[in-house]
Image (cartoon, rainbow, N blue to C red; front, side, top):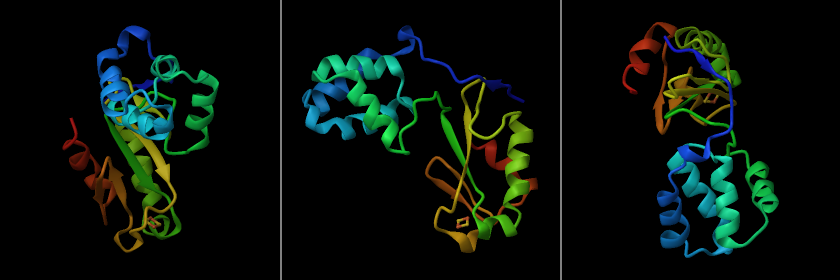
Length: 165
Ligand code: FES
């Protein structure tokens, strides 16, 4: 079992600046017009937007860091909190709720010893509850990264989590 990790700032020495250069320079030509796509690429790489990476980005493309934070906080798809390698999204929308979504959510919390919006200490998982992911007939639904697991019971959760190392 894992323990919960307090959300915190990434240390500068945890940031892979070579990879950042690759994204900002090679993929997007240091062009501030590509800001949203650059942020998406950074989030894909780190699974969230580390603050030192955003400050580095501001210098590289020549715009104020405050402008980058403005964009990063405006869109809900971006996260400024450290997240795990695997994002577990448990649907708590109505259709999933009536089919036991809440029990599934509780079981994930219990197995990982974390609450909603927390990350395990080993950075393996982040748990988030979401409102309807568009496949209500499969409820209760849990999405892990891009994989959708439908019609699951709380007893099956451990087996599913074991597939993600
Ligand atoms: S309510 Fe869960 S997928 Fe729609």
